[in-house]
Image (cartoon, rainbow, N blue to C red; front, side, top):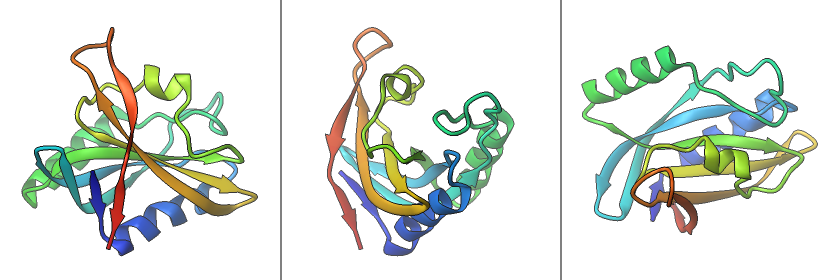
Length: 143
């Protein structure tokens, strides 16, 4: 389960609206307690994809290291990632699964239709390695 404050939930949805018609992306920071990931903050990241920014995203590794370092200073760990799907459902794609590598983390996707955030879903990356990984539906508790 992913627990996320209303303000963080709203900010990641707004990020998707702001970058439309391109995908937005960012990192979710907080604490993990068993199967519960509690988000304390979100760190927007720039989408470095220049070839297909409308349907692909990439977080610059330097940004990821910086975000992780800043989170640790606040005693927050990476608990997930988020991105938007412009004019597509809030459902993971084969590319999303192929490019997901942080097992036990949440992958949050917001569908943005005609510039407006519509639906936000979360998926947990399960498995033990690249050969058996899966993105499974995850409940989001906003509050």
